[in-house]
Image 1 (cartoon, one colour):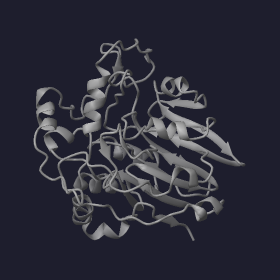
Image 2 (cartoon, helix red, strand yellow; image 1 turned 120 degrees about the vertical axis):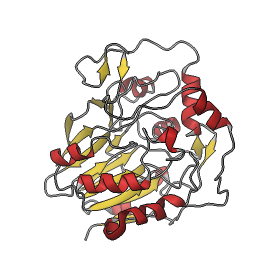
Image 3 (cartoon, rainbow, N blue to C red; image 1 turned 135 degrees about the vertical axis):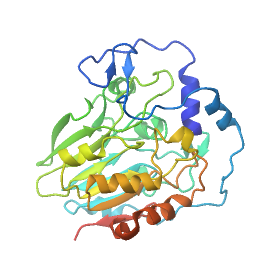
Image 4 (tube, one colour; image 1 turned 45 degrees about the vertical axis):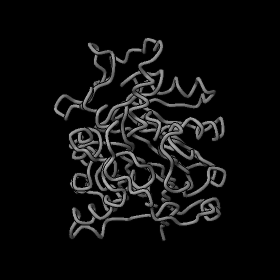
Length: 337
């Protein structure tokens, strides 16, 4: 979260170019000239209280905490061209292999966020040991979800999918293969003969990056579909209640839900933008998914809860449904039969 505060501060410095307008998007506010969440969702807290929290004492630094970690040299992943697999790289970065298509979510492979917040474990698979990446999806442009050195380290022709307003940042870095999507908008790709549909879905969050401006890039999650293969949902960052029942209605029989469970304290500040584990459990039930893969915990110290708290809190909240949780260590992979 400290990285997000820094992003806000730097983003206010200097001249920010006038953003393009997106009047066709239901989330574009013509009055505010930026994207907004639906008015029925909780409003994000801003102002002096946030700065006071950030500058104040941090009660649960858990300095010795290290997330569960498994050495993964990527060899099996690079050799896999047909089995479905999911691998937790760390934070919200997942490698999803779906019918021979390799998808990377919110990639951050750097040692820290903006040189301020260090990783508690190295990336589960090093960037250079990944299989060829066919598609990268970006849920939003905060520095812990969109890492410039990582983008620079991927091949220049990598295909990125981003929210409306997000393509300009990539094109300025020479990354021209970018598709922008609005909420509920889909794109179709064919990779090595495998057709796949990617749909951007709502998330309860916000966006900001230095010299880009607040909420000038749309945020969201993604659903991945390919005939005969598991249907997967990546939430990115989201508060609660968001639109999980509507996602379930439009995409019934989700097989995997990658949901964030960390960075949720203090609630007075983070509730509108990050789910706590008990809310993530409710979201999972609303989605009707078969398997819950927890993400967005244990990699960076962003908030006030102890870093080892989210998994235990999630197990308690899931109760009899805890058998649906697929907890992966950093570097851990799950493969289909």
